Image 1: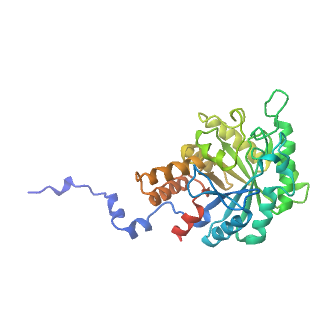
Image 2: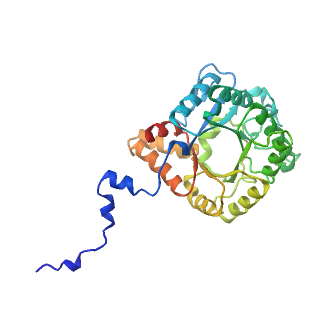
Image 3: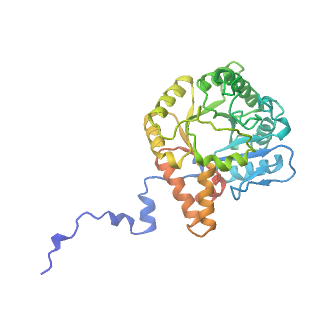
Length: 330
C-alpha cells in the first residue's frame, strides 16, 4: 500500500507551472522607465564611429545622437547620460574643453534638449577625464597627483556650463572628496536649483572599464586607484553614501553594477532616495562576446543581468542596451 504521507505537502513548483503563473508571482519587474541610455558624442566626425570593444555601440555625431535620443524616448527609456569626446588637439592639463560653453558636451546637451524636450531626462557626465591630456578625472599638482580641491573648482565651473546648456541632471563621477557639496552650491548660486545631482557614490577602481576608455578616447596615464574605491571595500561605500547625502545628492549610484550587487543591495536598503546602478562597458562587452561565440543566448542573458541589478535594489539602470531592452519589455 502506498504511503502518501511521504510526499511533500508544500510544493513551490506549483507557482512555476506556466508562463502566466510565473509572470503573475514575479517579485521583480523590469520596465522601460527603469532604464537610462549612456551615449557618446564625438567632436569633428561626419559618421558614427564604431567602438571596437563594444559591438553595436558608437561614438555619435551630433545628428546621430539626436536620432538615438528620439529612439530612446519612443521606446520608453527615462533618461540619456551624455559623454563628450573632444578633438584630441583640444585636450589640455586643465580640461578646459569641459568648461567651454561651446564644448562638445554642452553642444550635445542643447541638441538633445531641443530634439526631445522633456521626453527624456537629459543627464551629463560631470568629470574632466575626457578633456585632460593626462586622462585623469582632475587637475594635477606639481608632483603629478590629482589635486582634490583644485579639481573641485573645475567641477563647479562644469556644473554651471552644463546647467546653462539645459541639462536636467548632472552626474559628478570623479570621486573627489566634497564634490557633491561644491556642485550643489555652484548650481544653487547660479539659479540652477532645479538641476538634480546623481552622485556616483560608490565608484570602484575596476578592470571592467577597459572598453569605456576606448569609447571616450582616454589619454589616461597610470591609474585612478587614489580616488576610485578599492574593490575589496564595502563599509567605505557606506561612508561615501553618508557624505553624499549630507552634501545634497538627490540620487546615488553604484558603478560597476554586476560585480557589486552586494554593495548595491546595502545602499538600496539604507536610503530613501532613488538608487541607480551603471552596467558598465566591460559587463556589456562580456555578454556580447560570449553571445557572438554562441556560448550564451544573448537576449535572455541581457534581461537576466538587468533583472539581477533591479532585484538587488536599483531603481534606475544605466545600460548600453537601454533602448533595445525597452523595446523588448514593451
